[in-house]
Image (cartoon, rainbow, N blue to C red; front, side):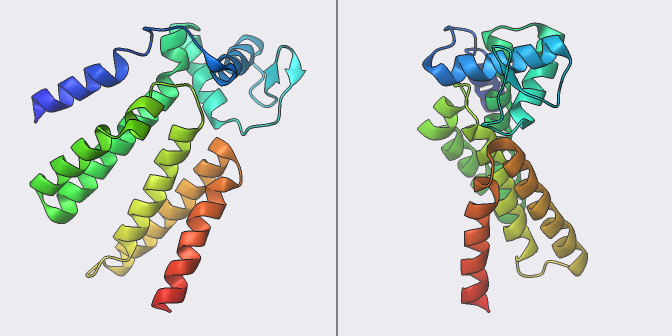
Length: 193
């Protein structure tokens, strides 16, 4: 298990710098964070000196802080999607391990780590993997709140985690952070009454 985790970690974070930034999105998101870090203005995102309010700021904030520590390069620019994708895998594995046992936990984590969307999405500087993390947290916390035998305290804390994850999803990509999980909650509530 330790060898698998080490191999996954090396595969996940070791290749972030092997290619330059490409697509307009990667350069745009990196530049906004670089300008934020250089100016010290964490309130107003700017692209080439112009105000840029098209996307929410959570990823920019993280990347700007990372640029301040490691400097602006491809590795530090892609650290947010890589870290959030890695956390999705670890969180899913840990929760399924706890809920269904070690075999299911390792299987769930391995399957998720091997999916193209998570693996490759974690290597590209976009907002989508951060959104995926917070939607996954919301879903897993909702499952935890509604599992048979969950105590009232567990349910309360799990639902707080659901709402906090949805708020962070909004800070990651906008209203889609509430709309998608909100639709799932409405359908669940309608079915379960």
